Length: 206
Image 1 (cartoon, helix red, strand yellow):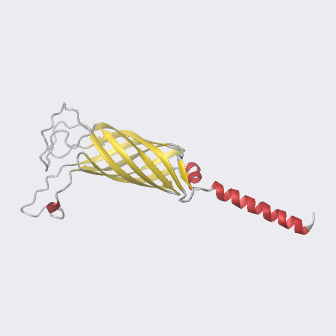
Image 2 (cartoon, one colour):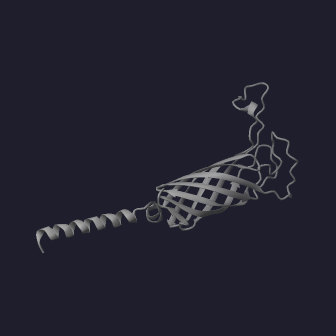
Image 3 (cartoon, one colour):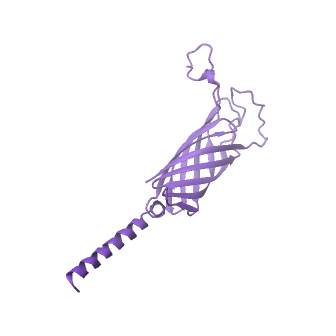
């Protein structure tokens, strides 16, 4: 083989290798193979008020993970109470709030649609778990353990995720008749309540 032909052959092989390597390093391939941890922050509105959660999940295999989040569920403050301090003689901070700990399983479908122009993967997800919540101030005989389940759509871009979801749970902010600012109907212990919420969740893979 002549030197010129050998040079052309080597250049073609190198070009083919680089193309194959670039193709294998698309975001969804990296997601499937390299990143085992995912940190996320979620905020939303529910039938009680507002909620915020932050946590992390470990995915030992693609599309299945376990993890936990901590956060808060609370009533929405009225506009004229924003920024007011407890030292204000005319202000009483009687808004109900509860801290939440939520272990959960993360289930994510394989890529439903890969948008090549945007390098974006779309997935469905499910987030079944349990909610462990401390009783709110003033509550009596409040529960502390509840079931929870969320479903939604996730967009994956490289190491970033953006999710829109819906959650339903038998958790209830006013479990046990705590002190509350808004005029809710009196809660009876044996009544069955559900909390419905919509949320946005941002995640980062590492």
